Image 1 (cartoon, rainbow, N blue to C red):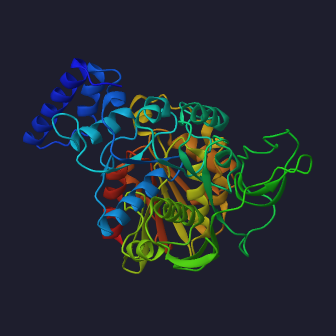
Image 2: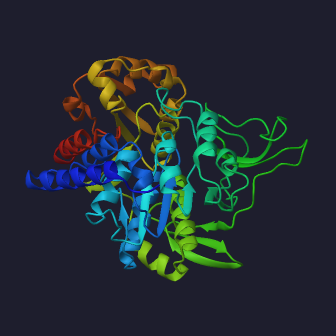
Length: 450
């Protein structure tokens, strides 16, 4: 699209808003883009794009992968612009482009890296037209937005531009099936000794062959529908990985690519973060960085402290763990991580959606898609549910088989740490995306009390 008067007016006003926000000491990461799109509805389509655009989308893990990719680019000396401090919808993307352009809209950087919300991809992807697009996975999410993953697949298939090179999770049949005519590469984790038959999870959204509808046969399922499957009727099967984590060790993985195996560091051995690290490796390699450079840079990075942070205080671990309220898959992963962590554990659950909790309108049906049963393990010696829906969480814990004497619940989140028993070797604090400040306050209380 050509630039017109509306575009330049929107750009000028949004540039002034950035200056005004700086004067009052505020970031206002969405405001400039919001102003621009309000004044010029097709602003993103008219805004000049950098020479190369990388997009990162998916249900879970996209923020972690985007942060890791950006950290590696920083350490490798590659200049770029991104929406790391903004939102992943159209206004956040527009704000990032405005901040990294001159007063005529010309980009100052040749590379842009954007985390992109999968649900609202119709508002961004057709305009920014990524050169590379990574999809981490596709799961059911909040009932309010995208509880049906087939719907998200349809949205992405409609609005991912033709010809964009895709980097897809081969172990997720929904993700692997996106835009079948587009060029693509896959990342995958090879079968590991601990991979068994079947799945322990309540939610299993892929049961039938997406090609013919016959029941799938699974070689193994790691969790939910992540694993390797084939159709006995038509021969459809999970694709082979172009980037395959063949060997997983405690602090590194060996990734096979192009007929060679290369070592890459792992921040931790939890499967979700193995997938996140592997996805970042595949994307950075497709961008053109050499394996050795990626590996050296990754050795200096880690998982964002706003997603997972582990500290030790007086011999006891204190762990902040993002759980994403109203997202049953993300919460199930967090619950299993608690169960699998060594020693005796206590868990403080802040699972209320931040915005819904303020108005007490949250739909609690998602609790029954989440695997609270992992918390019924004998090694989880105490669970404290705090927040507006504490009675609902307590009921779900009892239905999951948690013994009543191990479960505490209260409305006042500030007092949750006061209920902690001394016998736990580790304390997990699970929190929603927008309650990191609350989680940090409680962590401080736990650290002082230990």
